[in-house]
Length: 414
Image 1 (tube, rainbow, N blue to C red):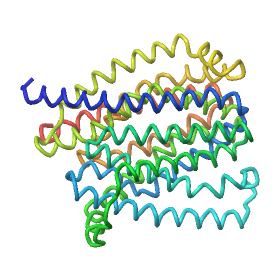
Image 2: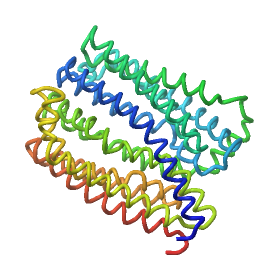
Image 3: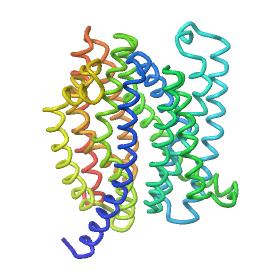
C-alpha cells in the first residue's frame, strides 16, 4: 500500500478509537441503566414504552428529511453550518406538523388510542423533534471531525436519559413515566450540544434554500429508504406486541436493547469516522476501496468475537444481570445473534450508498427488507419461529447489502 494511504488509514483508526472511547462510555451508562430499569419495570410496561419509542424513532427520521446525512458531503466550515441551519428549519416545520396530527388524533380518539397513556401521546412530537435535533448536532460534529465534542454530546445525552428514567421509575414505574423521562433526557443532551457547538448567527434564507435544493435526492430517495429501514427495525416490536402480547414484546425489547449495545458500539464509532473519510477519498480519487476493505476486516473480526460470546453465554448472562423473569430475553438474543453480527459489519459501510449517490438502490433494498420483516413475523403462529425466521431473513439481506456496498466503493473503477 502507498505510504500516504497508510498514513490516512492510521489516522482513520486513531479517530475511530477516539469516538469508540466515548461511545463505550455512553453505552456503559445505558447498559447500567437497563439493569436498574429491568428491576423497576415489568416486561409489559417496558414493552409498551419500547413500542412507543419505536414510533418516535421513525418520526425522528421523517422530520429531518434525511438532510442531516448530506452534512458529511459538504465542505468543512461555513457551507456545512449553512446545511445545519437548513436541516433545523426542516425539523421545526415537520415537528409542528407531527404535533398537529397527534392533536387531531387525540381528540378524534380512535379506539386503538385508548390503550396508550395520554402522556405518551402528548410528548410524542416533542421527543421526535428533540431526537432529530440531537442527531443533526452529532452528525455536524462527526462531519467536522470534532470527535471530542461528539463524545461529550453522546455521554451527556445517555446519562441524561438513563438518570431521569431511573429516578422517575423509582417514583412511578409506568410506560408513561419512561416516555416523559426519555423526552427530558434528550432535551438535556440538546442543551449540551448547543453549548458545545453553537450555531452562530442565522444564515441567509437563500443559502438555506440552495442547500435543500442541491441535496433534494436525500428527501426524495434517502428519506423513504431510511424511513422504511427504521420501520423495519421497529416493526418487530409492533407486530410482536399485537400478535403475542406486551410481555413478549418487553422480552424482545430488552434483548434488542442489550444485544444492540455491544454489537453497535464500535459500529457507530466507525460510521462517524467512515462518513468523513470515505466522502473525502471519493472526492479526491473517485473511489474508497482501501478505506472500505480495511474497515470491513476489522468489523468482521470484532463481530465474530461478540457472536461467540453471545452464542455460549447469552441466557445465563441475561438471568444473572436482569433476573429469572428475563431469561427468555437471553434466548431471544441467541436467535437474533446472526442478524446483529451482520448488522455490526454492514451498517457503518452502508454510508457508501450516499457517497456513491446510489440512494435508489438503497430504497429498493429497504422495501424488500420491509416485506421480508412483515412476512417472517406475520406467518408463523408462535413467536419463537417468527423471530427465528426474522433473524435469518435479515441476515441474508445484510449479506446482499455488503456485496452492493463493496461494488459501489470501487467508484469509477468498477
